[in-house]
Length: 323
Image 1 (cartoon, helix red, strand yellow):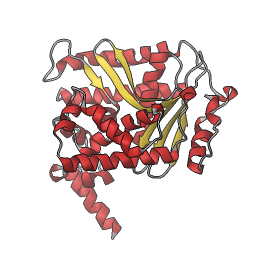
Image 2: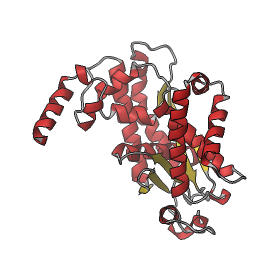
Image 3: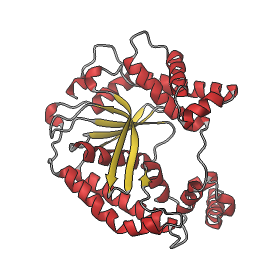
């Protein structure tokens, strides 16, 4: 992806920073041993094998059940287990804040391949129309959503798209841009690790790493965002054999990156995190112990707060310290 450092158009400082942080010459790219993918797969298999018994011991288990493991579930159970368990029981519903990211990624994808002059709202409307044509739950929601919610969704997606277009240079085909890239790894035919990368740029050249995985975020930095990308890097390393070169969380509201280079140690530590989180999920699902709490600032917005003595106690202490 050395060509990422080349651009014919005049760039603003934020766009130039994208090129500076994500571009690399061939000499700057790391090489990875071809056996790494097998070692990572084996580490996952060894770590998850003892949990096959727990998988079948869940109260609602059926023979041959598959357990799906996502970045969100990993982050939740390794945070506050009580909140995780509560949210696991809630039926999923599409809402404007949830749909916003999905529609925005579709609009960004269209902007990459758009041959006419880019008009953000036109791309947003095209993205809304495309997703509404499907036969999935999001399409059903878009077809029945109120006009007020549609207008709110349209405006918030347009805001994200405009910020992306302001902060990123026009993505060239030679950079191998890809949005909403699905990744999937199966372990023991019972555990499925899966996710979708917001944006990837670059491509591996044999054992020479070249890909950059990018997560687009609003709001403030969170260590969880870094862990999300590490999870994607693990899946891509096992899938392809050559891991991504770099991970980058981009905060659209701030026009700022948080970047991290991929190493073998990072990938194996991510394996350990997946194993730890999976064990916690299964221990809770089998009722072997009560969920632990993790009081912190997020307690203020937690849906379980009214029933959580630990969270209420933490917030009282926090308020007392403030005054």
